[in-house]
Length: 96
Image (cartoon, rainbow, N blue to C red; front, top):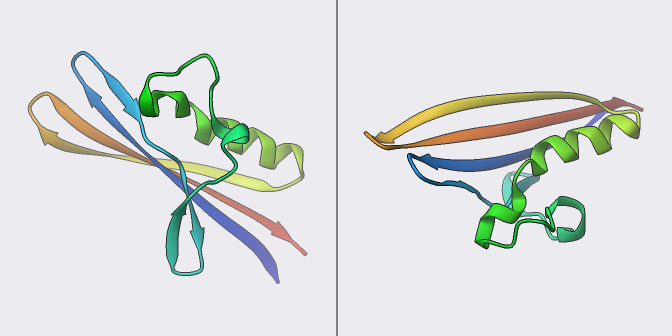
């Protein structure tokens, strides 16, 4: 039976600013914030949620280094003329 884990991250993009929100992980049927901040924070960015920039791709690299198969998908959602949301989702699985 394969083991699997799913992570998601929301990015809000406007003309002048991009905000990377706290990554989340699926815990059963619920999504919860990732508590291991030292693994996902980018210490060079201290401006609010921007410190989570590229966290999804760092998580992908960490999982692949540990032998997991991974897949990143993303969808864009237009909010209004100058703002859209980009939803990143990382699926990881491993055969036991």
